[in-house]
Length: 87
Image 1 (tube, rainbow, N blue to C red):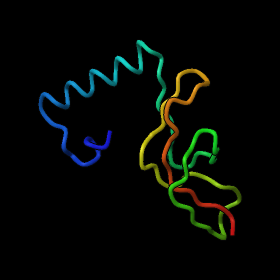
Image 2: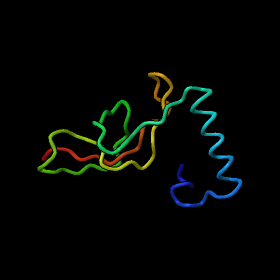
Image 3: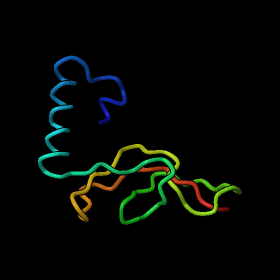
Image 4: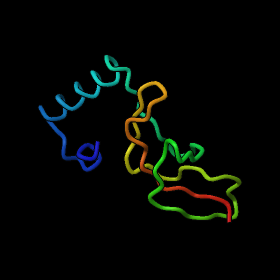
């Protein structure tokens, strides 16, 4: 995922990475999660940064550094995120 974000995956490496991701997501029922606007949940998110805003009514994800992965209810890796919350 990080190599893809930096544009370092191309050609055969991109094809292999995409196929591996498809197998993980489909065959092993692994789900990717973590998106801007999600309600922050410390059981599913690892907050790397925190900011406050007068407009915020709850703590939400404002930036996703790395998506999280889970299988069913089991978190394999929490999403690494930046959050914004009320002042």
